Length: 403
Image (cartoon, rainbow, N blue to C red; front, side):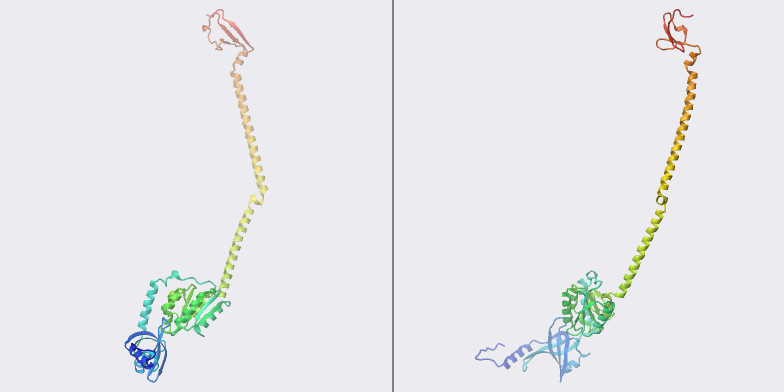
């Protein structure tokens, strides 16, 4: 490739291609992993394409038949393998391809180990946390369905969903659900449905299959695409025993496509039965409440204060009159007793009064100061005294005290 050339001294194309072949042959061998597609054979050579399952990258590989047949089990379309390859440049055709020197199938144990490592990464990043998962709408207006072309999964979802709720609407995206193009097509369909504002929930459905068939649904790029969706995603891959990694990040896992239809779409018959039961229950509650209130009102109305309010007033009038009569009797009796006591007291006062004594011929002698003269010995000549009789009073002067 270092030859000097010019328009006047060009190299033949064969020489250029030979130099390219010499340069490529110095690259040596390398172990590479990929997925086999477009497998075919012609004569003693097997032709295939080694595709990267994550990126949309592939390379042509030629394999001697003896190398291909020495691989146990023999690789088939969709199989994951590890190859020892070296780059080759075909001078006659001016084409580039790899030549396989050894093929080793990727075993189930190794696949499971890789899936387990990816599962641990997903869990560690929190993509499988329950708090990230969103609740599905009760009755989605439009459901996005990603499934295989003319697949049983599509029929199961559509028929069961429409049997449960005939008015449900679907937007179906048919894609490859296994093989080298599955991851890219499913991811693109998921992105398309997620951008559609009319889609309320997305179902990714596929029937059962082997571990290798379901590998696209454990692809890291698809798993992260599902986790990044704004629309709730339901995973319905395989059967109950199948657990692709997409189940971890989906908002809801369904054991089968039929189960997905049952979980996403409510049963109109069950809902009508539920509405009828709730309506009957509500009616019983309301009727029971009305009956209790009517009974309470009837009991309240039956009370004397409400059934005959005038009677209560009359009873109160009778009580007032009875109390008034009782008060009158008590007052009269008290006055009578007080009058009798007064008469007795007056009689006693009359009996004990000095006036009565004076009427019997006695008199009361008093000093001018009003003191009663009780003894004659205390009087002297010239003392003035007052003598009170029953009919009046006279003033006297002591002429000579008595001895």
